[in-house]
Figure: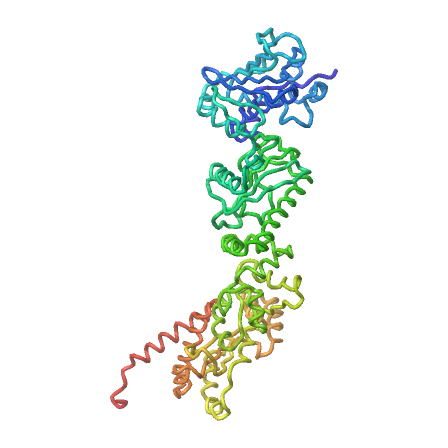
Length: 589
């Protein structure tokens, strides 16, 4: 014989409190939703909800009310929807549902009393539910159609029903409701969403939205962007943050569904790149999750997210066309968000190319300006590489863009998507040596003995020593490594940490590289100190000096130091220090 499930109401309430709702505060939202739904079902006026605080909390509405049969069907049955559909209480226009929503009141009370009278006719009914799963239905007293829900706080929950808390919760959840909502006679509902109100002129509208943003989010916005997605029944406004934020910051937005607050910190409403705005929206078609504190991920939410992202992007395009100075101010604040958009949007890429300043060896300028001024320019994809090469490359007439910051190199490589001629090649540091001046044959011949000793000093470090003449003259030596040389270094490091078999394989690959692919220590013959070093004749002193130049070039260039590099740096320092304080023998005096 089939039998019905037995429901432990205390277990259901515990499930609600621990897993469905984040806080008992939602009890008032659920009561407000039931009241608004009842008013909507009656459909003959704006309706009114009155909340009274005291020894017990009372929530009155002048909605459609319930008959005794409907009380049994809706208030004493959990999870059944067929009868609710028959009564017309599951229509599209409603915020919530009876039954499970009313159960949330058990989060703060052990006893719920509902006195209701149906607008369809019949006598008033009194329903009393208890947290242990019992309920009773008896005749009630009520002259007009509508419903009154009464709660008496249970032990430990009285703080949730105090006048101050109830007023705060009513204002939080119900401020924009299309009904007359009061708490102890104080009107809570405003005149509707501020972004949909009528204003004498755009200036006053903007002032009103700014004030609303300050009240809701606590900041005066850089700008306000109107939002509208008709298929989601969504209207609202996006407030642009007035200060920089990290791209990983939570984009928490204030979302209303049919003008009832869903939550104040909804994530995922906008694309991730739009981290620089905070939104307030009201939607009629988006679906909430079971706990009604977040949005349900479905195709409509995906389409809405894309549409809102397009509207934020269009605001930026309009700004570039109508107010370039304001666009520059925005870019100084939120360039990362715009860069992220530019990776997949050509309009945003044009804005970045034309308006966003990049760091270059010739000073800050836009990419478009850089290409116009420096047709043979290059870019580096590493901040440290840019810093060590900017002065040297600039002195050789090769201008550089620093593409080492987040998104920059990808943006530079994407430029041909908007202009086939906008090609900015990456710099191979070894290219710079082709711009360095070579020594005259006589000087080069005279320096051969020095070069032989210098090469032996750094040969074990995998480095080649060359002497060139270049600017700036203040730089005694430059450590230059090509892409091939960097590849060789990676192979060498992998070989050192690999087992015997892989070490042999990697060694064979490493041996295939040409010697010229090795990093170079370029000694600057234009530098006075470097010239004095090249004039030395004592082998030991030459080795120490060249090793010191090698270490100094690594440090100035922010190159990573291997253990062998650190050892050479220490040895050359101590050796030169010992030589500097050397006490000559009597016969040397």
